[in-house]
Image (cartoon, rainbow, N blue to C red; front, top):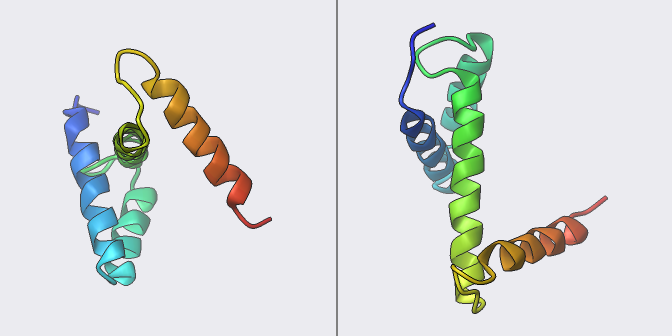
Length: 92
């Protein structure tokens, strides 16, 4: 397997989320299924998963800053609190 720029996974993650949020769940699901069926394909599945984690981190950090977090002081702790709240509020 050749080396790939990790940013590609993030770009695919952003594109999949965009499709999903714009109502093209079938298109997003089709691309995810293709990546899972061929984990070492054009964009390996693990790159997409890492991209999703990186995208989530950026979005939660932006939300933390909106809630008053200071990047050099408490960004990660506020982001962690947001994630704990989201987890707690998920249905069982």
